[in-house]
Image (cartoon, rainbow over all chains, first blue to last red; front, side, top):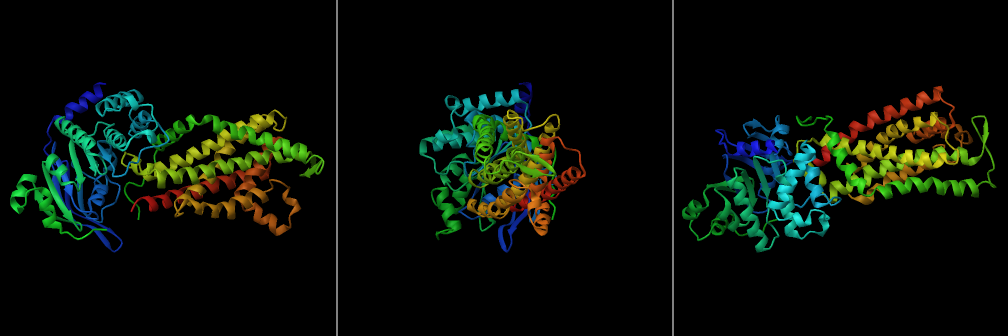
Length: 260
Length: 263
C-alpha cells in the first residue's frame, strides 16, 4: 500500500531529463524503411502525440520505445537510460496499450489484471489492490468476474488501458487507443486520460483522430513515410498552416491519396 | 545476431504461473482425460486382446499383453500432452490472442515467455503421468517404489517434446500446418516406438531407426520403471538420450520463436 503511494508521489516530482529522447532513430525491415531518422523528446508530465496516416511508422516507433523491436539506427533513451541495454528496468516503469485488444481470453477481467501484475513481479496483495483501484477507476468493478469475451468493445478497451496501468507506470504508451469506439466511450476515455495526466503520468499517444490529438495533446509530431513533417502545439500548428482544425493541417501535410 | 535482451532467467516462472492459473479453471477436464484414457485402454487391450494375444514375451519374460502395453500408454501420453500444449495452445496464444505481444511489454524477454510455456508443457505431462499411474496402479500394473521414477522422467520427456512442438509453433504459417509434424513424426513414433509390440519383432535396420527416436527411449524407461527391472545400462543410455534431446531442442525453440516474434 505504502509502495504505490510512494510511486504516486514520485510521479509528480518533475525530473530534469526527458522521459523519452529519440535521436535519429531508424527502423528498417529488410529493404523497407519504416522509420527514417526520427528525433523528438518527451518531457515529464506531458501528453505527447504522434500523428500519422496508416503505414507512417507510428507503431514501429512505439515498438522501439518499449524495447520490443531493435533499433536499426540512432539512439533512444527512456527515463534517461538506453533502451537497448536497460530494457528491463525501463519496462518496469512503463505501461503499453496496444492497438489490438490482446487480452487474455482464458481468464476473467480481474484475473487479467492480477496475472499481468505478476509479470512485473508485483506481490500478490499489491496486485490485487492495484486491480481493485483500476477496476473502480475505469468503471469495470461490476464486471470483474466476467469473461473477457462477454465485454463490449468499449469495456475491452478500458480493460486494456487499465492493464497498462497495473504497475503504476510513469510513462503510459497508447497506440490508437480509441479506434473503433463510439463517441460516448471515446469521451469517457479522454476524461480518464486527462485525469491520469493530472496525477503526473507522462503519456505518449498515437492516433489518426485529429480531434483527439487537438483535445488531448500538449505537443505532437506528424509523421509520414517514417519522417517527421512537423512538431508543435496543436493550436500553434493550426495557426501556422491555416485551415480550421488540426485535420486540415494533417491533410495539407500528408496529402489526400488512399493509404495501404 | 544476439540482441541484448535475449536473456533467460527464473522469471520464466511468471509465465508458467499464468498457464497454471488458466489450467486450474479447467482442472476437471485436465484430470479426466488422463484418468479415463488408461481405463479405456485397460478395457480394450486387457479384455478385448486377451483372447488374441494372451501372453507376450518381452526381454525374456512372459507377461500378459496388458502389462506390456500399460507403461507405453503413459509414455505416449507424456508425448502428446506436452506436444499439443506447446503446439496448439501456444500457437493460439501467440497468433490469435496475441497474448505474447502483451507480455512482451513487461519486463520479460521472449526467451522467458517461451521457456515458461515449455516448462508448463512438461509440468502438464508430469501431472498427466501421475494421474495415469494412479489409475493403472489400481490394476497392479505399476511396481513401486521404482514406478515413482516415472514422474521425473515424465517431466524430462515433456521438456523435449514440448520444445519440439515450440519449434513447430515458431515455424508454421497457420494452425493446420501442425498436421505435418504430427503425421510425419508423432504418429509414426506412437506406433513404432516399442509401444504396441516389442521392437525385437522388427528387422535390424528398423530397430536402429526406432532407437534414434525419443519416444522409444521414453517408452523403454517407463516400462523398466513400471516393471521394477531397473537400473540397467539401457536405462542410463535412455536417460542420457532424453537429456540430450531436451538440451538440444530447447535453445532451438527459443531461437526460432525469437526470430518469429521480434522483427
